[in-house]
Image 1: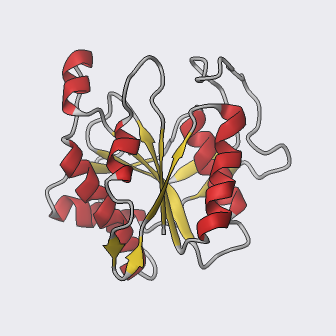
Image 2: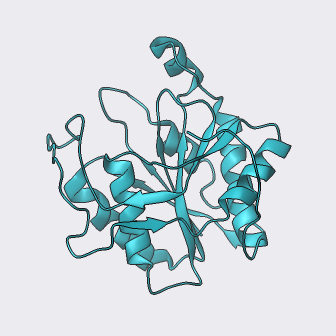
Length: 210
């Protein structure tokens, strides 16, 4: 299986998504070894890096992760949309506005991870979490859409995107919600385990949605 996180961006020195993912490198979940990849926070470079990781590892499950500073808890993203509309420049200085991720691609892709089952498992473990209907329009959404597009002919591979909050020190600096690193790592373990153990998804009413 493959987990990805992003390099720091927007002046930060660390990115919680990569800090969490890297701690799972080489671990076993349900008998499957975890491989990880750090993606550049750059529109031109992120998808080629992702595709290289997919070819190298040929994973059964892919969970791409990124930072959503200001959100509280784990965001299980449901929908990737075919648009890039950058509020700030990426790490290479690019700031595309209103351009498609894939010019001939569909308007959107849905995550194939069991988002509701993952939500139930996270809440049962007392980890703050919610289902999110938008991954934004920055590099995170580009990677989410590009991931699902790359796997569109591989239905046996479950994949999706998860946003994580600030680390505690960052959260205090920004006066926004955060999450301890060990809790974020535990959350990702639960999401991967649920994806491996759940054949479909569940219908689950309620749960806060962002």
